[in-house]
Length: 175
Image (tube, rainbow, N blue to C red; front, side, top):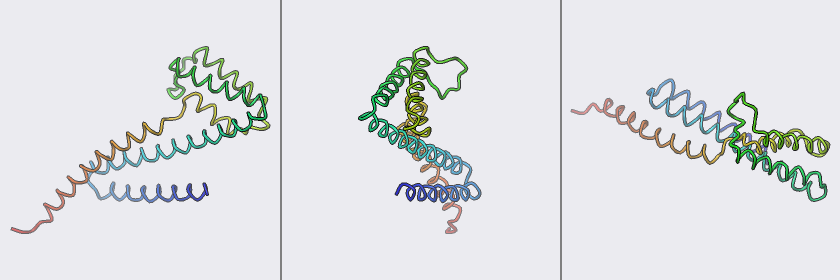
C-alpha cells in the first residue's frame, strides 16, 4: 500500500515538473519564478513528511522492542534525553557548523550509539539513522514547510491573475 502511494506521489511530482517547465518556457518570468518556488517547497514538504513517517515507524519499532527488551527501553530514553539536550542547548545539526556540539549533546549521541551497538541485531541501520536524526532535530518541520508553501501559493496566484489579465487585454480586439 505504501509503495502505491509512493508511486502516485512520484507521478504527481513528475506531472508538476512537466507543468513547471511549460510555465518556464511559455509563461512570464514572475509566474515561472513563483511556480518554481511552489514546486520546490512542495518537493521539500513531501520529503519532510516521508522522513517524519520513517521516524515515526522507527520509533514505533523501538517502542515495541522496549516492551520485551530493556536495552531498547534504555535507547528510547537516551534518544528522548538527546532530543531534550538538543532543544535546551540550541544545537542545530543542519547548520554544518564546524564548532563541536555541546558536551551534553555529544554525550547523548555517544550513549545512544553505545546502546544501538548492543541492539544492532534487532534495529536496522535505516531505523537507527531515522531515530538519531529525529533526536538531533535534523529534519525540517513539515508544519513550517506547509506554512511556507501556503505563502508561496498566495504569491503565485496574484502573479497568475496579473499575467492572465495582461494576456486578455492584449487579446481583446474590440474597439
